[in-house]
Length: 63
Figure (cartoon, rainbow, N blue to C red):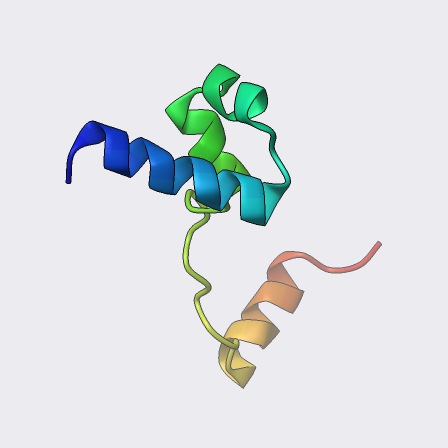
C-alpha cells in the first residue's frame, strides 16, 4: 500500500472512530494514534478460574 493510501485510510479511521479533525490527525504522532485507537492494549487473559481467583484474593486481601 502506498503511503498516501495508508494515510488516507488512517485519517478516515481517526475521523470516524475518534472524531478527530484533519489538523488533529496530522498533529498526532503514530504512537498517539495507536494509543487513541486502543491498539496498544494487551489482549485480555480471559476469565480467571477458581484457583487463580483464590490466589489473587490471598495475595491482595481487602484491608
